[in-house]
Length: 261
Length: 303
View 1 (cartoon, each protein chain N blue to C red):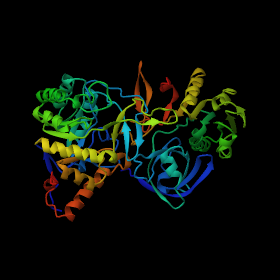
View 2: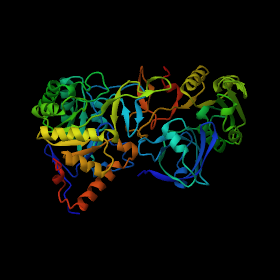
View 3: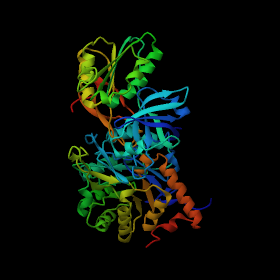
View 4: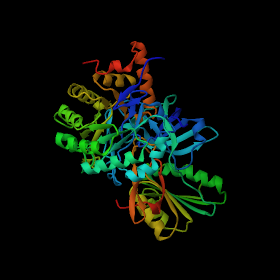
């Protein structure tokens, strides 16, 4: 039997702009977490019925702490931003599919755009743990240097961290996929970020025949696969079909997805 | 606890008056790690059509104060896949099974009903004449007493299974539609389906839902649902299943007092996967508090 669980907020601090860095104490649930999965957090405001899916940035099995980084853009996330250390929250999870790491791969590219960066940190840690000799390159894309997050955190696991900004205020001027394209010599690419970024990433990987896994986002209601709200188009023979992001995804093989929008 | 919770609808005995609202729990499998639906009087499936339906593009949902809009569009794999994948699962469950059926015309509905009847393992059918989110076979049927009557009659001829007709609140007179369904041989009515609604993204100045319009559910619509149950109770003799924003046992009791024989819990699942269990507990507590020996005493007691 799976259950909802309660977690104590240890920290919920503003990182920059509207971006918050939250730590939740849930010693049992962190043990189950896999890179790429998410938690669904109920806001506690009775007028907001739906839980908010939040990607897991880190799950520390020793300290029992989840790290979640989110942008407070809507009513729900703004509500979550008001949570204080000591508050208890109700959650579901960890939920969804996860990033698989294949033993034959040596050179890894992790591409995170904006709020797609946090789940890549959990993956970088996993790869480093499973393949000590792995060469991990992380490509992070942000609007400007004022939006850059997690650069130092990634350096703990990655051989290189390359930042790209839309306005050129930090690193390469351009997006994370353009940064990646400068040196496309990878065995596998993992990505998370805006749909348009993932579309270009998938195209890039397909042209070079590099395996590519991406994590996608959709509006969710139940977050367990029952309501069919959060679907994405997946190739189905000659045709396509809608698949649920919350339980078939959020991680998909990029070449299975239909990138028409 | 000797108080009686069981109710009978269309000759089918439910161990308590609670079921799931169609479309909110799929066939129950996804929620089964969190909640045991066999504790309920009945389990109601998502809508099933004769052929697979793709459903609508995304975004399919939008939140709203005390509720949500959805425009899923009855995505389902069709009756053949349903019989193969879901019926064997239902057969293992010790609770009444209600399958919600949808279609583009009367014959389409009847076809689904026939196939499900042949397959077995189904105790009741709920005829969805009221989905606001599909172009054909949607809410238009439930807005026209003649169309409602034609569909219910066609399904009535196709199956001996007890029939529940799910009605829309998006009508001028709910009593008129309720009477049409009763006249055509429906054994019970479900009230209500969602309320037609819209939300607009003020940043992009476009509707949030890809389908533009969607159905509003959740506690925001509860008093409207109660009003529909109240009016239908006065209009027909067949039992009513009340639904619309039920979160607690108290909410369920209110529906029964308005005239419902049973209730369905839907959107509340998204707020709490165990919502049905809490509704059940709350009803039992109410009965104990007020010395209600038989839950049937509550039906229509406010009239």
